[in-house]
Amino acid sequence: MKKEITDILVIGAGPSGIVAASYLHEQGVKVKIIEKSTFPRFSIGESLIPQCMDNLKEAGLLEAVMKAGFQKKYGARFIKGSEVGEFDFSLKHGKGWDWTWQVPRADFDMVLAQEAMQKGIEINFNSEFLDVNFYGKSSVSKIRTAEGEIREISAKLIIDASGYGRVLAGKLGLEAKPQVSAHSSMFTHIKETNRPKGKEGELITFEVLSEKVWFWYFPFSNGNSSLGFVGPNEWFAQFPEENELAMQGMMQQLEYYKGRFDQYEFLFPPGKVENISKNVSKLYGEGFVLTGNSAEFLDPVFSSGVAFATSSGLLAAKLAARELKGEIVDWQKEYVDYIKRGVNVFSSYVREWYTGNLQKIIFHPNPRPEIKEQICAVLAGYVWDESNPFVKKHERILRNVARLIEMEENPSSV
Image (cartoon, rainbow, N blue to C red; front, side, top):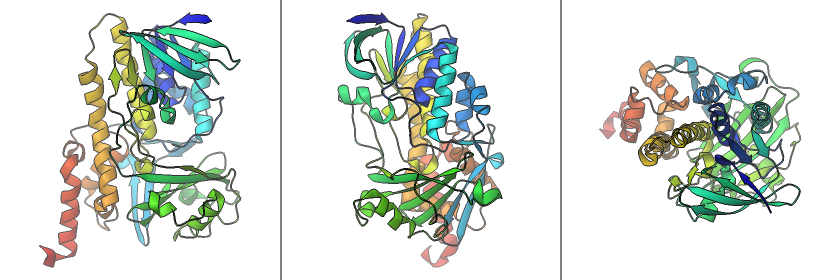
């Protein structure tokens, strides 16, 4: 059995793993990535938010993505019947990026992986993580390579960025009850050969079918578009078991987009993810740390997945680099507490979206500019900026504003 030694072993070559590995490599740390898939490979999570840009830049990956020519995303639009709520990232509270991208993840992840390999980072594709034994902070992991060879890799720390593979969460029994309700998603791509010009063919849009069910439209620069539905598990039960027939039936329930995509064949059979939201009982332990979706995933409604994946991957890498230099790192305070602050903000927004409170605010016909700017900053991913009252007071402010709107619309309810 071949034995290898590295400073940091990263599980997963998605955005979280590549950001972590790239940062560590630039700090002179020896890092190795294990990836179960062969790239390029399909993944959901195709709409980024501006906060991702900060993470990509700090990890030394932004320039490579800039060159790829992905569709730029300057904001987002929400539609519910005749109501429209539109957000422009340049009109947000505070500082930060005013734009980002919407990306076919197969292409985006491949760009990041290729850049990492050009830097000299070793990525073992099509390799299966079999087992791990911890000896204090050190570990010995057993993997099966693409050639079927069994290897042992000794590491001083494991960063689990395995996403929905959730490698260590499964092996160490860390799965926990999600923070948000049990929802499912169904999605596919089309080749949109007759795409409208201007905003209608560039701006990502969320069409709200009901308080708890919504549809996404993400146009890409390669001419393809991503279409998908999210809703409670029981909503999906009304459609045929066969995914293609189910997706066609769902498309007929659209109002704004009804008929627009009927002429297009699905580029692949619609995929379905049940019980999207994930959680774990702890984010780190002796010898390991969980990042991205391998730790927690809330809901795709505000496209926060890649932002948290890259934020947690970058922070884990920074702390690991410090620890390797002999510094004392308080992983609970410096990693868990920090990441949880941001996750908790978005959790409030997801919960209040599905209660309808946030929808009342988003679809208000005459929103106060400062409120819209502050909510826009949250939707852009700047959920650690406590100069924003919609971050600092997230647990109650959305309910309070929604209540004020109700009072405004129905004075007799006061």
